[in-house]
Length: 342
Image (cartoon, rainbow, N blue to C red; front, side):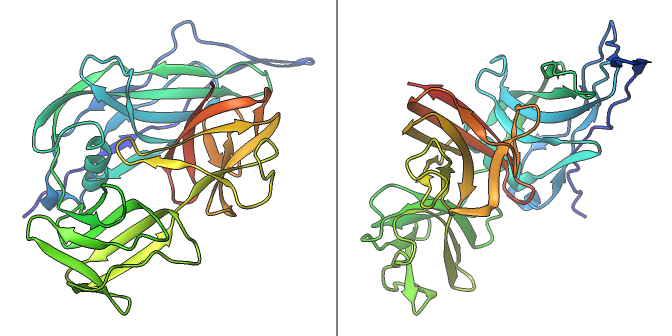
């Protein structure tokens, strides 16, 4: 019987201490020896396609600063000894029970920076960002666990190459089961076919279905050029294309709070959305497909992005480079970003 890989980051909430309720407010008493979070156990991280649907579990302990606070926990990985200079964020969210990730999702994240079918030595850590309650206005405090090292083996993914799309790109099968998926940049005037480079088979369109040696697949005219999700099933001979465009909206952008948003580009290696654009003094947020059902703004502590969060202020007009990492796309969406004036 196949044994499931279990991977769970259990973070049990914070036990805090309020001291001294006085007429002028509540005092927070900081422990003289705050207890940082810790990774208690590490799983076997030899990842395989056969176990791709299994759930992984990291077991951890909570941060304890000595007072009540809400916390965001971030599970990160980097090359061993790199001191998290170029870290991969595995999960990031307000957490009080557990963090889960499947083998295939972790494999896909780490493949953006580490090679397939080889052993890579990585460091892992839990980073906690605390937001103090009681309206003190104090800055968030960050506590990180000690590094835990582990050897990780990733598996390469079967792929379909887009032929004729104008750039080198592909969609991949996380489980090797004939079901492929990816983010692709499509041009309205450039139809394409899908090639399996291992079997040397070309797939195209046949009245909306997939067909061996079918016609080139056209980009939807209604949405035009831009980023899309593309899925294909070479067993059922089906495919689907859907717009997947992340953009900036707000008074600091060219169109203000109106559509269309200022569209960002996507880095398929890092999984980041990025843009260099001119902004004026005002505010911005991030939206998906020009709609408000999915949008990201500041959390109350201004440490990460959350669904329907606060507007992000732009205090100085100029050219900016912005990079966005979506840490959770499904509702409620979360993310992190960097912004730099050029």
